[in-house]
Image (cartoon, one colour):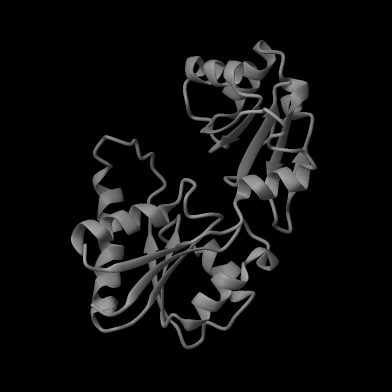
Length: 240
């Protein structure tokens, strides 16, 4: 197995946030295994790459990864595990043929990324394979920049958590950390709004939708938000 598998962070959406290293590696890889959230949809990560380099000569393998919760220490849903295995099937075949394979993933691979689950599955099935993780600009950093707020200063403590945590756990987080970044917000916004009102944090929160993309929106009056949120929605709460 002479090929190398690269998990490449391509940033949150703005093609100009694709790093020089990511661009170089993507240009050199002959195959892309790309994730998409809907079976009949397209890959946002691949779209970002296409804005910066030609993919006409690339072997493109699109894999539908169901958008379901993965809980550490618990067996994932069968369809989720099947998607990881399908991706690894394609990767191993190409690595054995000497091809370098890239898995472009949104933001940074180390933060709630499908790419790392795929990487771990590959390492379980082919421990002799070589994997390289290429960091990218995270949506968290992009959101803070867009909203013009710091994530942490001085002796601040920062927490990045799914908004799907239950309220008791979130209350504990808000009481401990000076900055809380809530991800996976789009389906639970009414509950989060009520919790912010309860904790008197409504005026300390900023909501960012589709950061680093053309339709980016920054909303400071989060509690009045009534319409449905986009999947790419993040909230930063500075509790101080």
